[in-house]
Image 1: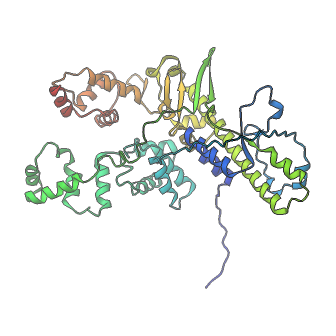
Image 2: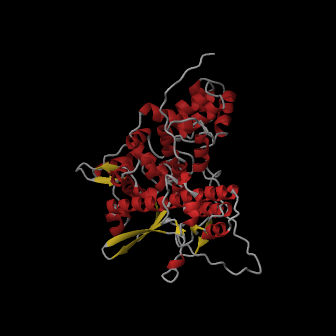
Image 3: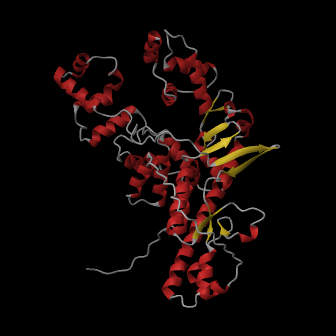
Length: 466
């Protein structure tokens, strides 16, 4: 056995930062649940009504006022008790009957489930941020909505590291999650079942596009195998899920509550937090008063209260940081997308998270946390914050169009096509190119699938039946 000393640099997140990051990525309903849980376990926190001009002097230390003291652990308890900050506390009359607190139940989302699996692996901060960004761009069906090149370009990450993290996420449950298309998802599922060297894998890899056009006997002839062998392979393929996460993490119908509200006042747009239903917290001044009056408080009691005070300060600071960060990010979005807020969805401009990150001087991962699963109420309607981020396509004259604008054009083209002669993706691509929009056929296919529009051959059948 050999003993020795090693010098290593390690980056460790402080508990305050971890708490702040977790709170930042919470949607409004989950934030409310977290606040109520903290109220239940920390006696130094209490819920108060929003302050008015008449009760301003009775206000305790709220989340807007609290700041973390880096020397909090070295606090002199006697000095703290003797320092008259001016807290006043008014006990309410005891109610004859206790009212039960409402119980809030939240289902785990696919994002939460994948992020939980990601946390099981020993990753560097950079690797974790890449993984978090990838997971944030996986849709409800389990498919990755952006290319690996877009991820690398946005995060400025190393290609090999990014591909490694994507491969890791594709090994998570549910099988097939994180794939960029149906073929990749099916191949991932087959590899997960140790079926890589099978006929089913070969069919998916080389003949997936022919499965809906050819019979099993025709397929067997192409592959040079017997009918029964081809039939068994097709049974294996049919057992796979075309949408890995569909239905498993779909939450029940529930109203969408915006985290932020954007209103036009005069010529300016004002962004404010929609916290009217969120408990307003402050540090409970009663404990200070009770301990101060009691000269016989034990050291254990004082240490307990000091610990809970420290936790309360961290919690309130994280809550305030969440509010400030979200407002700052959305204000930057409003500035970049002013035409949208003035004139409507057709005027949405191309915008990437990196642009906003540079503007507000934050990391791209922080912008991703703000945008994920959160909504904003605007004069044009309610939108997910992610809606305002999209890469553009360039026209031949140099003008840029947002992806959403191109999707709208594709949708309009399909709506006006001849019912008995629907347009193929290549024909749609050619029509867009006539409008001077540089787009590839596979991109048209991707946008059509995201719009949940069937391929031309299936649209024809549907319209004939109608």
